[in-house]
Length: 256
Image (tube, rainbow, N blue to C red; front, side, top):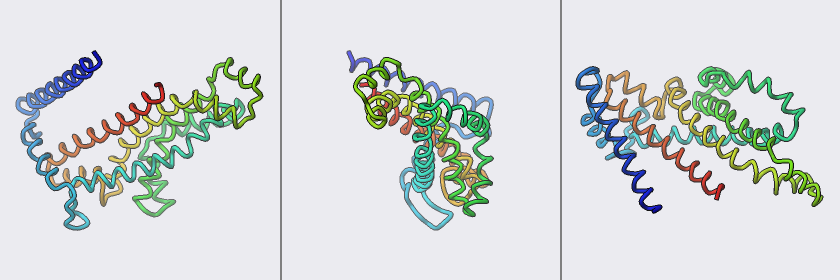
């Protein structure tokens, strides 16, 4: 039964993708003839993936290198943001005073556009690569912080009472009550944060230049190579899907 449901989900996903390709072909054939059709893009994508890690100089690298540079920036910024968000989330969630203190700041800074942080990072670090990582760290931490804080603040009273009965110290209470209860909320925040980070990097690299999938798209557009642009967009989607699936897997493991 489980195998049947799994096969059915794969079949439905394939049908959805087929429908997307058909719609894409119809739009480019009848309405938006300036854009390349699916056969052209998939042929171009195949050529790009044949030698993904070729290196012909600073401005001529394979698509695999571009994705690698982007992922490295994303994971670095995501890691830094998580190091800030998780402890702060626990502190805010467990303390009403800290929540009242930090909530206005969070609500002011959270809606700021990711690209607005890039010039700040550039001024501080004097390097576009570090500015991109800074932008990712700032914009990806909010979802993790808020979800962690919500989980830590919503521990049921029964759990708290049991901890008091057994005389748990603060550290034991954190380890055996707050952290296990908050973990699913925290993973949800991390899943949202990695998705935000992956979206931000494309725009940040268009500003930063040099390397990365965002720069690759912008460079291809300047060369009027729409096949490369759309191929890169598809690869961005695939990598984003893999990252999302990984955190969904972690969520399922925690729930089990």
